[in-house]
Image (tube, rainbow, N blue to C red; front, side, top):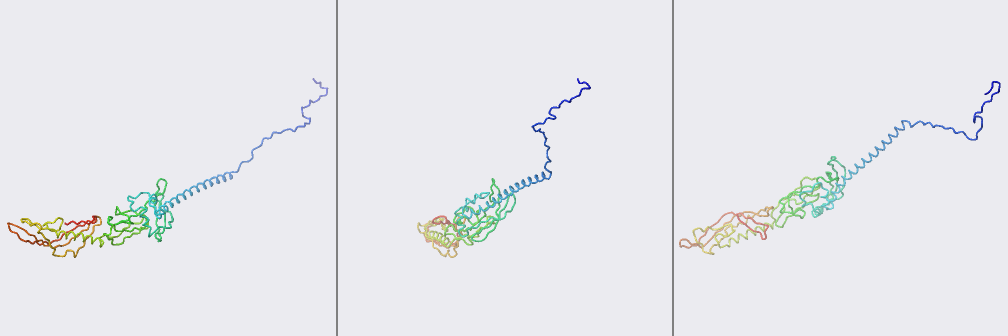
Length: 346
């Protein structure tokens, strides 16, 4: 314990006045700097939205362009198949298959485009609605420019032609062919092209315009405006059949020869066998004018006749030469489907 008179000595403080060779480390806490300004955040958001909009616009534009290309491709593909004479390829492009394909064959198309080929097929503007769009197309048909629209419909993710055939109507289908093909119907679907009728045989003649040009698939009904009748050879064939049979009847020795336009009533008398003779009085052939039913190929007509019949007859023990005049008009029917043609009377 120190006394008040004793001098005092301060206790040394550790390290207070002692120099040190080591640097004293000072721990500093870093303060956060100021963050991005609101303008930076807004600009970033706008940029992101713009990028998203650009991607969406590109996707929509690409999708629309692909859709339009597919539509044009369907229309051009159909017409090019027709132009190439590929009936099966053209039919594959149709939304609905026609009930009859008689005139929708490669053979018929080859004839249809022999005089009027389809060339330079081009697709143009789109129209219509979302569900039934149309494609404007143009091409040359026999060198003549044609423009029309093709209506499409979507099936199974693909575009198909809604109405790719026109109707061709012909008179009396059994009497003629079209582009070399026999018909089963009078109204037949056809592709664009030229269609020409010809008689089924040289017994038939066609009067009128035998050719129809179908320019577009949506063309209104085309009609081969023809009259079908007998050719000169057909008329001569009918005349020969009728006259030949009539001459056979004139040569008969029975009172009622079978399948003849005349006969003698012998009721109450006995006719000597082989004594009947027929003699023609008039000329029934001056106005001979048969007509043809093209559907059945039957030729019909009428002609007047005058015939005298003579025979040796007996009655009540008396025998005499009797004469019976006959006069009338008879109808004939000649079946031209038979060879040789057959004649019946009515």
